[in-house]
Amino acid sequence: MSLSTKLARMFVGAAAVAVIAGSASAAPAADARSAERIKAHVTFLADDLLQGREAGSPGFDIAAAYVASQLAQLGVKPGAAGGSYFQPVPMKGFRAADQGKLVLSHDGKATALVFGEDYVPGRDPRANATHVSAPMVFVGYGVVADGLDAYAGLDVKGKVVVALSGAPASLQTEERAYYASGRTKRQAAEARGAVGFITVNTPADQARRPFDGSVRNWQNWGMTWRDASGQPHTPGGSTPDLGTISIDGAAKLFAGAPSSFAEVVKAVEAGGAKGFVLPSTIDVTLNTETKDVESANVVGVIEGSDPKLKNDVIVLSAHLDHVGVTAPVKGDSINNGALDNASGVATTLEVARAFAEGKPPRRTLIFLLNTAEEKGLIGSDYFARNPTTTRPIVANVNLDMPVLTYDFTDVVAFGAERSTLGPAVKRAAARQGVTLSADPMPQEGLFTRSDHFRFVEQGVPSVFLMTGFANGGEEAFTSFLKEHYHKPSDDLTQPINYAAGAKFAAINYEITRELADADKTPSWNKGDFFGTLFAKKP
Image (cartoon, rainbow, N blue to C red; front, side):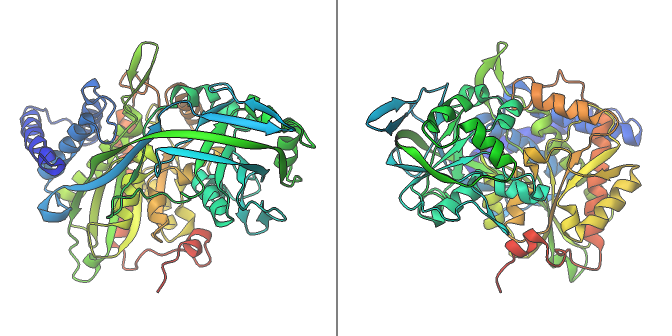
């Protein structure tokens, strides 16, 4: 039975259950009804039944069928091929088959790095066995940008590039996130002929996200989508990820160098260090287990009402997947993903309801509940490159992981000031009594870590809202990241404020309504970094 047939059958069952449940519900006041609807969606999507909604799993398929049934009840039409709500996304799953081997050689002496203490192995979706033996070149952060060239004076052809995690703090926060991306760094190394890439954790990253977490999840499945020939889509693929090195491992990597690792980090962070050839060569053996995975994006559409503007499409996106079942934490191994991202899916469905029950939008709206965000923004990347519509996508509004454990009074609107979406976002927030704030955590690189960025890469102006740090938000957000993010405790035991969810949905509705009904098509601001970098060629 094909995935689309299986999902269709599940969809029929889910729709029947939802209709029965809806017919028995009470009818509280308008705001309370919105909060209750969001609570109902989150409660279902974060249930243990769905086993953490990992892309390609039966639990994800149940979630997809549920969401499609909700869209159908609202009157949101199927938006995929053949009158379906499901856009198949063919994927390649890959994970480390074993602990691999990383061996340093210097002055005739071999030193084997220790798995779990010094390193976790990389993964290569293109090959089950990867062997690289080459000299190493340290390139600082590995960033190539205007005024910055980590490779200046260095020859890395045929060598393994070693780069610190992160990017210079001198860069603008969203541009910093782009350059801190491992994908961006590997592509820069690939363009210069490097045969492998190693990331070294900085002390700051170790404090924010301990290496122990990487060790705990070292055999989690990664994924990418497969092209028409069945090959994995792998930007920077000829410069494979060979592994991540801990601070302890870095001390060994830099042994015999002119400066110790601690001195190098201090100098790089101060902006005064240059790269250099490391004294050791490295021999890396990786074994990667791969499998074909079938999953699907859920796509719904509300047709625009304006004879001309309906040919413009605005996409509202939220990722439906989470990280599934992992090693137990305090006896619990199911990562329910209540806030990440059942809350975003629930608020997206509430936005869909508001449009379905209200005045038709002038532009066409697509509601995209996508798969495999947690695997590297895979479902959104596939959709952005293979849209289910031939009409131009002119804007994306993304809803991902709103932390709804407090009554937020401000939001962070990533990407808003880069395009004409900015004024619409500001007005929409103001109508709900909410202000806009700057990114309070630039070190997290959030701008490149959610689905809107795959639309940005296709030249589409996009915005991603995060609940802000005012009114108790800083404590709520940082506590969530430390205690619950990508852990089994992101479940329904958290003190979720569903009224805050209703307010978050209302803001996103107001943004989308203004964009959908405006006379002018959304556009990048003149000279914007991302608008220029990803400008569509004529």
